[in-house]
Image 1: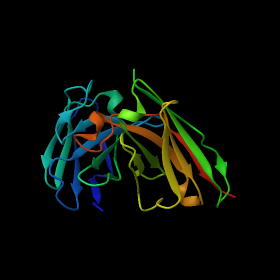
Image 2: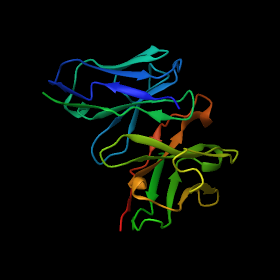
Image 3: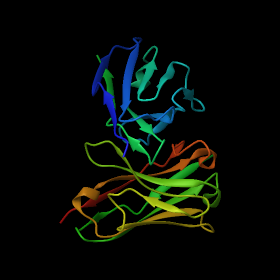
Image 4: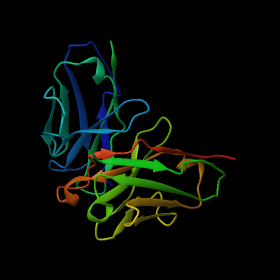
Length: 106
Length: 121
């Protein structure tokens, strides 16, 4: 099983600031990585797939990068609706998710 | 518009069984890959099972032998039969679609709102 880790567990950011979230895979997954956003009581929402391709309707302030074992999700200027939990997921083999990074208001 | 609606969650005693349903609209289950993913209280997301368009089914090790995924093409619905339930199965269960028939890999572009399964005596 490919184990995914995320850091930090919690990120406190002020609106308008930049947020950088990290995700690491226990072995190389090429670019088979997706990012999701989840708010309380809501379903996860696909943000990024293929490590860097934005899903349909996702604002340009969300960007993904990385390959192999190290990945980054960047939110360039946090809006109020962006405070949520973010998960990475590998799909090189059977899907596994990271434990999540909670982005909250500083 | 693509929609997935899960139903069937309940409070169930350890050792019991439950069947979850995922009613789909906006696409056909017979031509797509559909998965179940769960989120236990205070924990992250865990992939549970998937059914491919061709009918093949796969399971996470944690549920293999206890859970069965199936579908009814006429009802455009995917099911998850869960047997021998334990407290570790307590979670919100989501169904989710894999885009492009899985040609780019098993990630999930559309999700339902989830249904809560609580296993407790």
